[in-house]
Figure 1: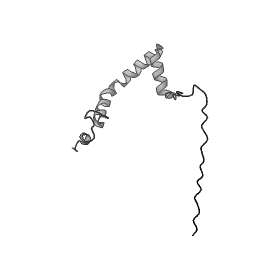
Figure 2: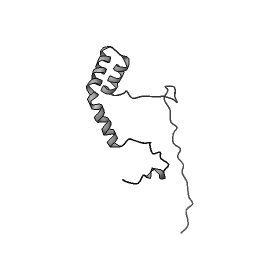
Figure 3: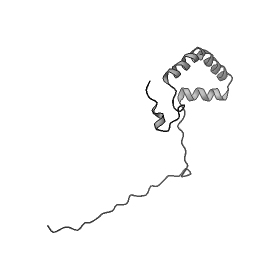
Figure 4: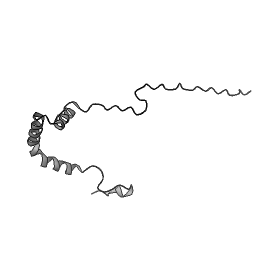
Length: 94
């Protein structure tokens, strides 16, 4: 096994993404529950559970783009015009 180089950059041994093998084991353990999970979501949707409706639409259509205006209060921003500077250098007699 390769040397653990995280000790050189201050990283924590338990930080970061789980190993691909661990992820695969989890998927294998959860796979038999897929039908149960679909039925539970279906039952919740039919019962008009708000969390289920939200979850369904977020996965089916994707989350809407979030737009946050923290600076202008909804008004447009007029950006200043760039400043142009011309530098004249003396000509040398040569």
